Every structure is written in C-alpha cells, then in structure tokens.
Image (cartoon, rainbow, N blue to C red; front, top):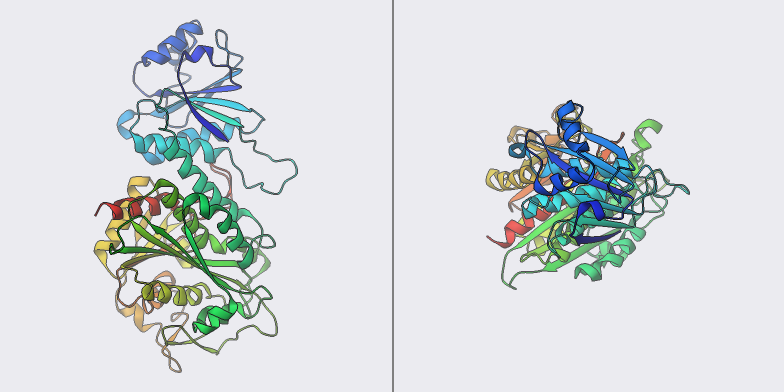
Length: 487
C-alpha cells in the first residue's frame, strides 16, 4: 500500500471511498463544514436526526454522495475528544478500514487526524493499515482487500511515515504468525527476517544446530530433538546509541509448531499452535520498527526457534536437560516447552551484555485463565522495571497487568533429581511458576516476562481487525525502546 499525505478540498477528492472522522458532542470542524456544504447539508441533517452521534467507531456509510467526487462517504465517530487515546483512535480507523476492505476499493482517503498529536496520528494510520489486512494470507480469493493507495488528508508531508512504519511492523508480525507451520519453521522464519533486515538497518546473526550444540544450549535442543526441522537461534542488533551505552534485550519464544511432544495435545488444542511463535514474531516486528524509526538506543533482539514434535527422538518425561548456564532441568511435561527454549536464549542475552531484558511468549493457558484473552501478564524481578513496561503498554493502549512474583512460587519449581523442574506443583498459579522458572536464567538482571498467550491470537475478528494474529505489543516494545533511548 502506498500512503501519501494530501491537501485540497475534500469534495474534490477522486477516490473510491472517503473516511471522515467526526468528534462526539462538538460542532463540525471547518473542513467538515465545507464538506457538509458540498453535500447540501447532509451531515448536519444526519447529526440533527440523532441517527449518528459520533460514538467511538460508530460507522455510517453514504453511497455515491451528492456533491462529492468520492464514490463512498464513510462517517466514523471519534468519540469525545477528552477520551481519545492511542487505543481508541487505532480502533476507529481500523473499524472503517475493515468495513471498506470487504470490497475492492483501490484508492481510499482518510480525513481523520489532521488535528491529532503525532503519537495519535501514528496510531490512527496504523489502525487504518492493519484493519484492512486479514489472516487470509493463502486464500486464492481473499476476504479482505487492501487498497493500493491510501491518502491521508490535512497532514504535513512526512507526518505519515511513523504510522506506516508501525503498521508495516505489526503486519509483518501478524503475517509470520498467520502463516501455517508448513510455511514458517525455524529455517524459513530466519529467511523471512533476513529479507526485511537490510531496510531496517539490522545486523543479523544466526546459530545453526552445530553452533547451538557448541554453545551448550541443551535445554533448547532438548525440545527440538523430536523434529526433522533443525533449531535456530537468531540475534538482531540495532546500534542506535553510543558504543558504551546500555543495551536493552528483547527475547522471544519461537516454537513454530507445538504438538505438545509426548505430552500430546488434543486436536482442538493443537489446531492453532502455529501461533506459538508469536513471542518471537513480536520481537522481530518490534526490531523492524525500532530500526526503521532510527531509535537512539542499543537494542538486541534474540529469538529461539524450534518445533516441538513427536518422534523416536523426542525428549521424554523424566529426562534431565542441562541448560546453557549449567542448571539441570527435570522434564515433567513436554508441553511446557517454551520456558525450556527461553532458558537458553535468556542466558545468551545475559552473556551478550543485556542491561535490562524483556521476554515475550505465548507461554501458559494459566495466564489466559487469570487475565482473559485481551490482557497480557507481566512478571518481573524488579518492580520499577515492570512499572516502566506497564506504563509503556498503557500509553500505547495495549492491555497488560502485573502478576505477583512471591518467593513461595519458586519453591514449586525445585526438583528432587535436578536443580529445577519445568512445571510447578499442580495447575494453580501456573503463569507465575513458569515465570519463576525463567527467573533462574536472567542472572539477576532487571527482567520482565510478558505472557501474551491471550492477546497474541484471536479466534474471532474484532470490528477493527480480522481474527488470527493481532501483532499485540509491537507498539509497546517500540515505546519502551524510544524511552530507553532518552534515559
């Protein structure tokens, strides 16, 4: 999609559709008044009728509007100006874009956001460019049709670029997660990222199976050994700060398909497990945004990539794995594999000099039970660092909530035959015991674990975005990195 900033009379725009944002409980803005005049007062009559009041994401479509060159006028409510934040504005434009994408409309213009702050404008553009992209990545006839050209009215040249970067990164994450496991596996994941790395100015380092063995990544390799697809560990660098400036590490779980291993999932539980690499996809999407935005910070992205499959080579219940940091791990559930992958990747981040760490993973169903499908869980060894990440998520309008990390939970991952075990005592507090397991591998560096099992993948569509991968927390990680750079 080409995205261009434009100006001039709205009534003269020759487009397939024009999206017009209207504030709730406010008089029509001057540019909207001109459009109202061109339509013979249609907007005024609409508001006076009470049929449209401008509530957030309220949509009204006027086909072939008299007095306009546009083939379709979509009036969308922005809600009260005082309640408008980044979440609201992204959902508003996303709702309009998804509605329009139900048919082929090559050229769409938006008169939304010309009086918004730069952050709100970026999210408005991001919402419009993600709302029209669906999960139907392999359908011969797609259900949603992205326009070839998006025109953004009333903003300065160049003002659209931050929103375009954000949308490209979110959509890249979504595409990686939405593609089936036959298309995305450790080697092909690496190739997809290598393809976008030069444009983002990212350095790429890849550890193959031999290097992983040489590096003693026994925990990650234990999960991977049941698959015919060899494991990979990928390290991305954005060097936007001084050579001696601190480094932020973003770590992602990349289980490109999770059968559960010998602790085999049911068919129902397995059918969406292409999404078990969403943590890794979120990290590389965020690194793309960080690189293209030229963030003034040193940021390192690390992802561990494996398939968790069943074969005669599969790791077994009762096996003891030796992680890269030397700790031994008793395996009591092969479906608690993500933490085993992250264990070695976190150790690499520590060794490579990470000053602070955030890891992301679709780690536990327990977090979904605790917080629902739309909220990510935050767990940390340092409350201040956790608060910074939570604040970044809140500014972006992404839902995240802290869970307690009381020391008693660590007792549940102690083993009688090894240093630790990969599950707690029973199902209770499973998201937290998983985090306490991961804490064993961060060497007391300030660290936040984000369990994104709920918000990373949607079974059903939202009004502002198709079902499937959501790209959740790409925006949050970019926000954290930007603020890291101005410390």
